[in-house]
Length: 476
Image (tube, rainbow, N blue to C red; front, side):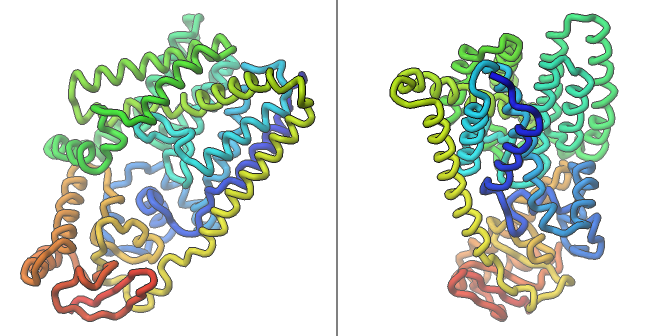
């Protein structure tokens, strides 16, 4: 079979991006953390009284780049993940195409499209171990991990400069990929047979990563607070990513699927890379439990699995498809099978469109800002993560958005404890004491709650919406 040309592959990728469900119509989830500094670069007069806005930026290159997107409007920055969905599809298909060069390429492209759409409808399909996702539903620094697929593909094609460039770009934009990129770089280095190429690749890697390491050391690492900050992140904020002491059922399934994919992979070179990556995952898992270091866990040693799982799921799915096809080929023609694939794609497009329509009609906050000013800070329930950027209002703290500097992480936890104490108070005096502690460190002007029953002290109710469970109080 003739291989699909790049233009047709890109068109499939564009189709996936257009009809996937990953549209957002307001700042959502981690965007309230990772797009904050970028938004401030393009809107310097906003959120001056917001504490998190004045903390150190952990992804400065990402913020500078994204600030230019904001100059074209919030919608572009919020939904810039669509570009990465195109890139993701193109490189995933190109990697899979290497293993199935003799198969019907349109059929193969449709199968990959179905799997990608399914991942858009049911996110955990492509998720790596410990919730590490290479292609989430929002634009944030982690989405630059898609370039790991690009790096792998160009390495397999012996285009080493492109491979290195994509590896470096992914890490510069998302510094927590450092261990992942170093690991992948080591694997690439091991399979280079030319000594000169090994030396150039190693030297380029060291030179490229030094500025990133220096930035982390001088802006994030604080010796005095390092231990407590690491403990807060690993055991309180992100145990779902960092705690490697236990795995859930889906993680076990993913490990089994990795082994099956390595066995089934028909591209020998790709198989060796996947096997080496899987060996490193096993090594890091053992090492993490032996040395018991929170600092090592915050290097996210399982993050490299996010490169494996899209390939793994796609290869295993294709193998199952062709296994079943061997039984139905006698009664169903090739054209009918392709028609069935198109029908499945259409169904998934409809399901994804329904999700997008629901998002479009979700008026999240109404007009709360008409009652407030940016001079005073909001106290919000700790689990409310979508206030700061969507309402452009300074927020005391929330549990989703944490800083990256070690000293600031400990302050974040202190603020979070005060806020939690306020909303969980069982008496008027207890709540008033908590509010007084908060007012000692922040100019609190407003209190937001989802239930008036949580407010025990005397505050002025200035807005309420019983349908959305929103109640806003003015602090006297």
